[in-house]
Image (cartoon, rainbow, N blue to C red):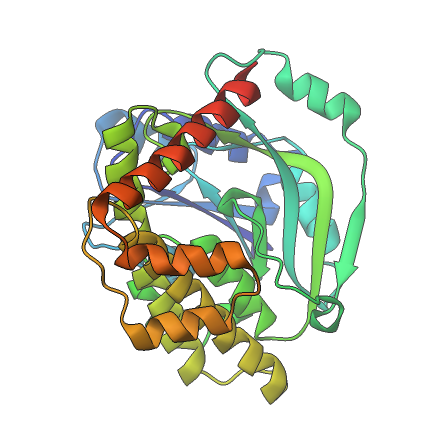
Length: 335
C-alpha cells in the first residue's frame, strides 16, 4: 500500500504534462512507497501510452471546475497523504522522501515546501544550483501560533493528510481555482500541526498560459484577465464561506469564527477589485461597502472601496497606474 498519493491535474495543456510526471517518477523515494494519479480533461495517444507503461493511473473527465479534478484524484487514491503537482510544474528528486519523513509525525496535517519560479529560458543548471544551496529550515506551527492566516501559494508545494477530505468531497467540487487556499483551510479546520519548509523542492513554471494576471503585458488583455480572475475569486470565496459555515471543524468556535470572517473579507475584497475596474459593472452594494470598510484599517483601503462608485475616467486612471506598476515590477524581476 503506498504511503503517498501524488495527484497531477491537467486542464487542456498537454505540452508540459510528461515533464511533470517524469519529475514525480524520478524521486529518491522507492516507487512502492507512492502512487501517481493523473486527472485530465483530454485523451492523447502518446501521453496515455506513457502513463500506462509507467504504472500511472490515468483518469479522464470532461467535468468542471478544478475542484472536481481534485475530488476524482482523492477518490482514486490509496495513500495516507496527498501531494499535489500541477501539470506545468516540476519537483526536485528528493521531494517525496522529505515528505515521508515529515509525515512520520502523526500530528502533522499540512506541509508546504519552498518553490522557485522558472521559465523556458532559465539556466539548465537550475536544479543543480538549488540542490547545492538547499538548506533545511523547518518551521512547525499550531494554529494558536498563527496570529495571521498563512495561505502559501502554489499547490505543487502542498502536501496534506488525506483525512481532511473525508467529510467535504462533495462540497469542494464547486471550487474553481483556489485549491491551495482550500487545502490550507481544510487542514486548519483540523487544528493539528503545520510544517513550513524553506527548502526549494518545487519549480513553478512561468509561461504564457499561466492564470496569473501579471504575466499579461498588453493593457486590454491584462484588464480583461483581471476582471475574469476577480470574478472567479469572488465565486470561490463564496463557495469556501458556504463550505466552512456548514462543516464540523475540530477547532474552537473562536477559531472557526476567524475562518468565516476571513472568507467574508476576501470575498468583499475581490468584489471591490472587480467593481472598480473600468470594464465591469459595479456589483458592490452599499451594505457590502460598509461591511468591507469594517475589515479595513487604512485610508488607502477606504479609497479603494469608493472606486466602484467613481466615474469611468477615474477608474481608468487608477487601474492604468496599477498596470504600469506591475509592468515595472515584471521588468525588474526579469533583469
